[in-house]
Length: 253
Image: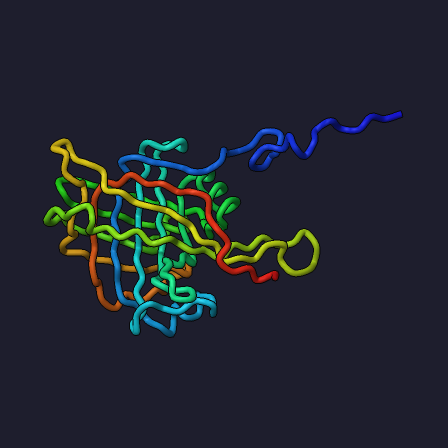
């Protein structure tokens, strides 16, 4: 008689493959993350098409924030990430809805997609910092530039200048069968930034001056995001923490 396998459900690892999990459990914490953050007004006619109907924009003219991060002290070494966040509310509570993220490391992409449902895609991202000047480019596919950002470090800001607001993503897992998705949820994501400290013990967060941001290219949806007016921008280094998320709205119930 042929014997059964011995791996029990109680022994499954946290992530796939269950016999050799690719990543561990949150929270995930990173230190000294270099950041460019640019908040700008954008066009309602465009962004309304990529925001779920359950959410409302926080402003009469919708606002978006572009954040580019460079991780140097992470479990996945030296990777970069870029996200677009739209300022929204759900039943009066503020969230930063993320329709799309780009990332350079497969491990970071898989972890974010599987646990929280971050809509991450691979891209080539660069962030250069020299004498207080910041320059970042995003290319997708490799060689096709879809975004460029430049900024100059201005006056130092207080640590309280950075406001943390929970993110939100639309997590969808298709069914293996020809039917509705197995999972389709709006998920809250507590991803928090704390300004790191410089050698003199002061917060490493600065007003960004002379900001120039340009979406371009023809082969990725990011190219079409309208930038109508830059509202504020900061640069600096941050400690970040990403904890378990929570389901805000379940489309399947």
